[in-house]
Image 1 (cartoon, one colour):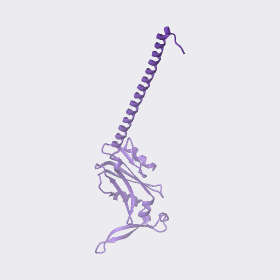
Image 2: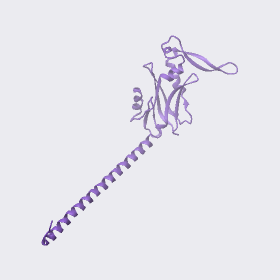
Image 3: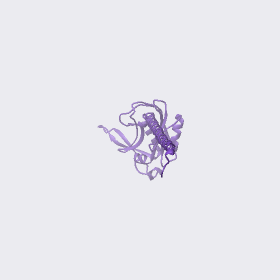
Image 4: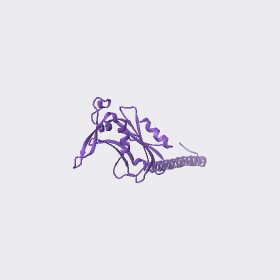
Length: 213
């Protein structure tokens, strides 16, 4: 292709304009990329900050748990709070899988624990519901022969006996228990029977949430 000498200024001008447009386009793309990168960084930082807030918010509640075990023939309802702070307005809800009945027990406050703590009040509430089906048997005595420990055996022929012979084993296998409480910052929580931890707006809502377990 030949270009007349008189047209060279126009040609150079056109090339210069095209080059300027290309440079401007590249600059715009680079600027957009930088803006998008900054937005992504800000979004990521906000996400990290929100997760950190959530961890801090759940910090105490996540260290609270309750469960049921059979230990040497005895029913143990065990509570753990390793947060170092007490919890308040504590409500326990237990449901026995073979029954529609629910058992409730409340404490105004429960302090922190180093080792899991037995909750005799909750144990008695659960056992009391089925006392007619249970037979108390001596399992331990002192040096003088005085009974010191007992276990409960399920009465033969009762509906409960279809599930097993020893009460503690049946309760540990079939019972579900949850806990509702307020943490030190007065936030209501529910630790469900299967371990899920949920936050609630009011203590009553936390207790009600356990009804669906």
